[in-house]
Amino acid sequence: MRLLVVEDEAKVASFIKRGFEEESYAVDVAVDGEEAVSMVDVYDYDMILLDIMLPKLDGLSVLAHIRQTKKSIPVILLTAKDMVNDKVKGLDMGADDYVTKPFSFEELLARVRALLRRGRSDESLKLVVDDLELDPVSRKVTRGGQDISLTTKEYSLLEYFMRNPGRILTRTMISEHVWSIKFDTFTNVIDVYINYLRNKIDKDHPKKLLHTVRGVGYMLKD
Image (cartoon, rainbow, N blue to C red):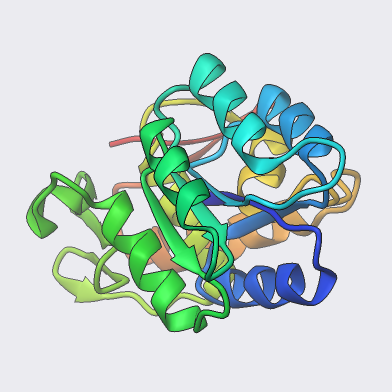
């Protein structure tokens, strides 16, 4: 999952970014409304955490742009206690939820998870490719019924592959979705983690699921 945090308070943005990265999310940060609009127009996000009070362009204007251009992205507003009117207006404009500052990270994480699985049962959330299964709710990964232990980054990488089965994912796509826009794509970090993941999900199985598409990228398929 890739999140965009739109927050001009550096400490708050850092707090949110660090927490979600520890939960296997890739996180980008925009510090003003204009930067947020530019990033939304260029990159694909699974969710946006949007502060209302922003420099250059306020959060509700950013929300309006999101709903005009990428209507399906879930948006959670980050609001101050006394901004009742803005909360109501934001929800009327298409925000999916709001969290009032100050908030605990546990509350924000719970709201994000609830929103991402809205309208779906826990069973339907499970990702399955052949006999490889990933449960985003419990974060459990198995192949052939056997548990697979993954690091945070390995889990993020596998989840991205399993949400895109049969699709060639380039190194740039992987870096942007699993790492962040600031990741150096000229390093071999992606290849290293692909090998880590391949050793854990394919090594002891005759049927290989993670394939290299030479000169293009990687693909997970049965």
